[in-house]
Length: 462
Ligand code: ADP
Ligand code: MG
Image (cartoon, rainbow, N blue to C red; front, top):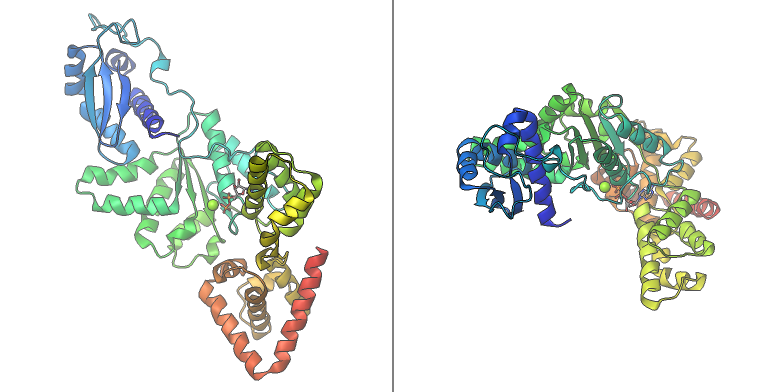
């Protein structure tokens, strides 16, 4: 969306808020204002006459500027220009001879139902494919979208990268935005942090308050990737207060995180327990059938035809996450666009051979490594992901991490995430430890090799 229409939305929102705060008669009398344009310093607004201009200046200019500041977090001035009556949109836009309403109808101040400027238009429930990996999360999200702030508050969606957390969160936002007048705020934890830090450095109290008010004013607050807040004490504290204000007012909050809240490090305990007290659900990687369904849906959406055997090929070879599936599809789409021919199995094989050959896509998932390793040591995969530190669990856990590092392309951070949200340094330490053991005890090496063979066998079958 262009900058211009963002400003229009802000203007409409400011006017709408003012309308709800002042007397209707007063509003009708004075808010005969027409948005002309804006940039980051100034909003230009047309008024029908000099009389109006003076009155607005005297009575409302600071008020309106304050509203805009609250919404965008910084001060901008109001530039009032006179637009001669003949040009004015409303035929009734004359100086008020009496207290007759001068605004034609409510619509004049009501913003047109536009798309939400912080949300991606295509991140909706309609475009979200539901499979066994995400059905619980998707159903909960729909229930929340229909009845925000009632049950399931806050709602936390967690899981690894590219599994659809942001999409699902924004689908909630888009749905509520389209069906209600609620003020939906979407923000990444990173932007929230940056805004908070700049607000501290603002010189005026008013500018400092603008940041706080902005989010405490939300009806629906969506904060993406809250793991980013680890170690950021000040921002966590700020979020804690915002949380309380919104929670007490039954405003819906949704968070996403790359791990369970219990696995967040350097995280304010009070905030952790607040976020954890709502509904927490995780997203798992999609299985083969869901991967096919996602590819079909995405191909349809971009208007390209992909034969079933190509869908099958891609789904079999890319199992990591949905983002990787999408980028494979984009490679194929680009080909069809450029060459003007449909994708065949041969072409897909050829175009994607590097992607498929990457060890990351060798269909060996961390989950399989955990399953096979756990089985060998008569444990459950959850033992490997869990917190228990008995030697009978610690050693297989370290072994599994080591194998992940050796035969997949997952980063130590990703591996850590999949082992109950452990830190990447823990993964590095585990790998080092196994390497040391292998150096002194060659039987361990053969154990590792035989495990790797089992894992590969298992992966081919699945
Ligand atoms: P995350 O926030 O978990 O890293 P995203 O929400 O950004 O993941 O998802 C990555 C991409 O995959 C996005 O383009 C999203 O639209 C797509 N995607 C994820 N899950 C699904 C799904 N279930 N159905 C359709 N598309 C999906
Ligand atoms: Mg995301």
